[in-house]
Image (tube, rainbow, N blue to C red):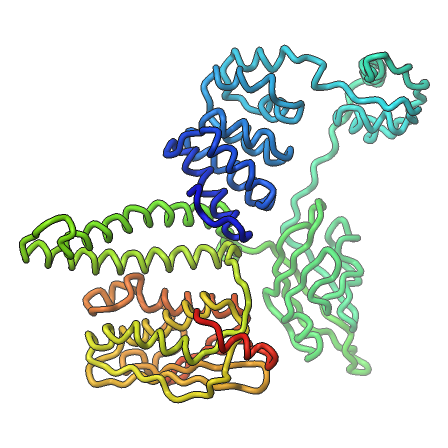
Length: 546
């Protein structure tokens, strides 16, 4: 890990995350060398990545040295680490004096600290709560802005105008006390009596509305009316409102619409999701279109969108992949040692078993890599470096690697002759991974005596196409059927993807979208379109070795 290449942004981030994870889990000692490596990488790692590493301390038992390292970072990163880490009382007691006011404030918000640590935090007293003073005069408005939130809120609710005296003279210590000002505000509150709580907003579940011919709401029985009157249903995104596009289409066609989506932002009683239904109105005398009259309701539970997976779940999947990859690689390595008899003579039956284990471990490693790639795409963490990549040598390497699979399936894999100048403007590793996964998945579904042909060509000046013929098992299936094929139906097929053909094709589709392309499925072939490389970069692409 210490010798890993961290000269690139991706390498620095990967080394930082993995080294911090190993120290937090007790697999690497928090020595001066390891903590120094983290400190050297800190400037190369974005704050968001460092914050994610700080939050992950909650999943382990980090040493005090690692917590102190994160506590010495930016305030948001230090707060994340101090809220997530678990340390014994003596560890906190040794660290509290080294923390700044922001760090101690983060610890004060925790309710699971030992009593001795709480007393240590209280011992700092007003040191953490005094305001700095630069010697300049402050106005009454600035003094009110410095008050606690409760006092400022009371003043705002009661429309109080405070006639404050000039600020106290600064002390020699460089700070000034506002306790006298706070006491005066408290006395004023007691004289005014208890503050009436603000009325609770009435929950609105339905409302009616009418629009003019231009689709702008002109009347509603909902309160407050200002949230709806003047809202244009012709605009998909109008200020703080989001309107379903089917509404504008219906208004242009003068037809009714049902259960169209409307999203209102803000803190009013009407904020949230709605379902709109309306019918057109026509003037009885002239027959002209007069607008719409309709109603709105809150969506039912079955109509609500499922919650997003979120960064936390994606991060958890990537951590699981990281935990699976290490033992699986070890199993594959030891089985290869036994099969090749590098540790000494081995009986033939055990060599056969070792070869079978190595083959199964290789399939498992490929599945783990696919899960890792899917998690990176889902979490928008895929590191891509676009370059000009010539397709001919890439497809030849893929075909050579898949010849053993084609032989096992009893089919033939052929790369059709193509123009040597066809190239794509994509990341070279991601491009080879995309095409290799696509061709390998299709070959694994082929039957004996079938021929799988791969062709490449250009579609205009800006797009390159790679087409792969589908075997009989996949031909004539719709796109939805192909993308939902599961692993259980293919469990008995030799060479089938461990996670299923559907997962592999969905991975290909998502990876192609990340590279700026797309996939198309016809009755007899699957086509991947990728951005074509500019003509000026073809010389550089021709020398690329992958």
